[in-house]
Length: 548
Ligand code: G6Q
View 1 (cartoon, rainbow, N blue to C red):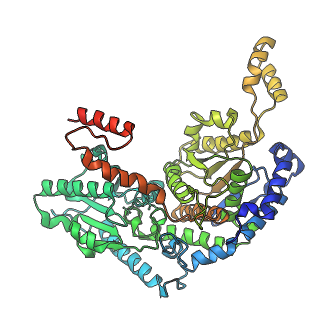
View 2 (view 1 turned 120 degrees about the horizontal axis):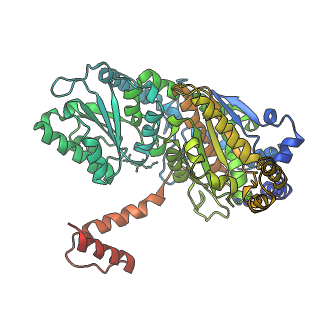
View 3 (view 1 turned 30 degrees about the vertical axis):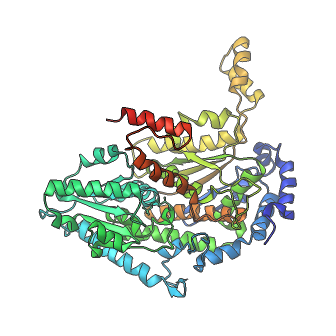
């Protein structure tokens, strides 16, 4: 067994190197190198990455890429791409790259090329999406479908919901879509009032087809449908499934011909590229869906072939490790200046925190370093009027990701100028800050009295030195979105390799599920329970006494 990465000489060198930068201000780094933007930016797959606003030098990049070599990153990338069972606790490969493999090179799992199956499902999706979009697929009264409802949760919801939202400009004009995930009846009730059973298509999206929330919502949807139509035999026209579990799909009453398959080597949070993306594909059309896959494939190729020093996912992954392990970073903010990406922070929360929120390494030993930072965020302009105060003047180091579209999906006079100037201003101000001297000058030029100036001065200083990545693209096309998502998937993989953790399992979500199934029948026990801790028992009794 290899000693932990933090015992390696290169980790120690990074620690020493951190001391030289710990008190450095990024202003100084920019002052020392007029070409800093040119030296710390790169362009690939329709994205420009500016990583100049970081507490890094060329030496930092050298040491971090050496750290990646020490962790055998290149070998791990090969293992993932070659279909090895890198998800060792579930004995599975993690082959989301196969779902978007546009090169048609074979990809083997257990000695079998998976590409014919992948392509067969894409073909079936094309056939089905075209018949729904053209109006050829009819509901039970002969009317074309106009509403798609995806019923799923977690990876079977967040990815397709985010992509479908992001690509609203590409939606078929006749079609609407909804995503039902929460088990609170409010979610179903609020959406079902908008549905017409004659023209609604339900997609039950569940890898296992056993997930409590999804199955409850799917059963309620079916009961609602049968009640409205009075005819169980027409279910096949209105319910399709996306799953790996054919028997359970049949048990639910969905025709296996109306089931879109995927495979155990597709992790839930990496599944938007599979048939789990069916709702997206119906809304944007299969050509656009394949363009999304192609954008991701371009990023897959970049990740596989570019040297670490010019490799986008590698660089931003390593820089995140730099802050996490050497500067005590606890959180990261994701700030899209593109309203179409309003669901992107929520999607990334699952991708990153379910993948990297682990405290044991691949060998089952406690890690001796921090792993995943907490991911949060919101569309930039809204955030400016809410939480940016903390970014500018709080006490936390919060590296930020600015994600900026040069062109919006829609144009109105002056709007995009406001978006762009705000995005650049925020990244600049968070980096530069404003010193006491500069603040005093600005306040006196604004005509403040000496007394008011003395009072306000400390409150109006900005410490700056808040690091950020800036990602810019022309316009959020399916292709660019594919590359952007794949960038974050691979960034997450890079960090998992450095930390020697498995990013593809999620055992942390099991304990709560097990406890919920124990508590479920207890909600109906007639007497107060005394079985758990006094808080749970007390709360249970309180709820039971008040339930209608
Ligand atoms: C993601 C997780 C999890 C999963 C949901 C839904 O990586 O595995 O979020 O996607 O629990 O699972 P099903 O698709 O099986 O319903």
